[in-house]
Length: 250
Ligand code: AMP
Image (cartoon, rainbow, N blue to C red):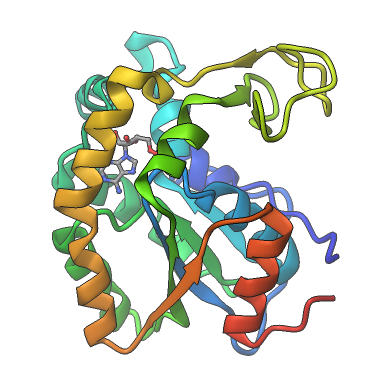
């Protein structure tokens, strides 16, 4: 496995942040968008792909969560509003999301490539991304759609636990930590994300079906869509992803 690391400082903190470890520039950097309902394991696959490709894992949800954990006085009104949408499991408005991504557009032009996780989430966001990339003469390599039946998604989301410190993800049944409530990697406290609670899950899946599912047709029309079954272990799904992208496993 490739051990190159990137610290995503710019993506998580904003345009003025500098990454301490810059990704290695590539001749043909991989620029991927990952699609799939919440709970299909996009985040896990994004981390595996990032390590394999040396490209940054760019999650819009991570930016909103990081902003949400800062004191209220340090937040812009838009970020404060975003936090409220997020708490309910609803989508943050397109203008707020695009403002946040555009501020970080340096990450999209990075010579190391990128793996977008959780963005775009609506056709409007996809149109904005497409126009921006065309203007910057950048192109997407592929859009991966992870597919999983609804009943399986609900099981995965409600059992998910996340480390407060290193953000590692566990599952109470499928991937329990050695000690209940404690991260295997850094001994941080595990918690259930507010939007992984049953009342938010329904809202998130509804939002996905209404807003994000139409993206599948959008990217299919552009000839970029690659569908991957998301059942099985993370390693199995990863192997399918690499095979579909024609990337060697080692
Ligand atoms: P995620 O970690 O990708 O599941 O995102 C968590 C929450 O952040 C979502 O439920 C939304 O409230 C918000 N969010 C993240 N990315 C977007 C996006 N591209 N568009 C709208 N809302 C988003």
